[in-house]
Length: 207
Image 1 (cartoon, rainbow, N blue to C red):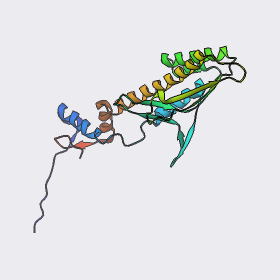
Image 2: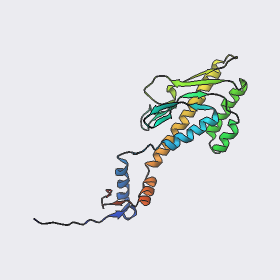
Image 3: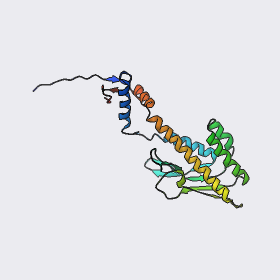
Image 4: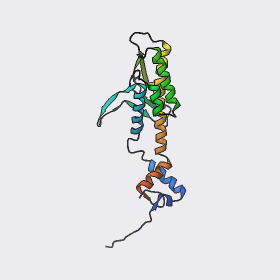
């Protein structure tokens, strides 16, 4: 019987050729993101919803509870995001949304339009946001039932509230997609390698 010792050379990412670095990134992302990477995006979205006047519902899970926000993506036509809860007037929404997201004109548009509708209905219009029962998660699976205690709502107002709240879900989906693209990008991979001092074999396999 004999014992044989072998040695191998390991490399930091920047020490590998560029094509091998790219292969290493692809292999790293093959297993997908192994954490709830969307939590920060969800948290910011809940803050935005609170500003605009949307109270996101909660559902129970093993962690306690989580918001009723759903998405699928990001590769097929049926992908998208949706949320469920209740909408009502929120004071100073136009000002607060600009303070929270000063450069986001789409959020400004949604907040402004909802404010104008509320103003026309004495700030007492409300809406229930529920599921249409679809297996998909995109915005068109959201049922938005608007109502007013004393004034009849026109068909156009009803449809406009629905369009605006569905636009908010589409805005969320774009944010989730951008976050996912960044987290699976070479730039993000490089940052993780440098922060954790990952080492690789010469063919780009994580040691």
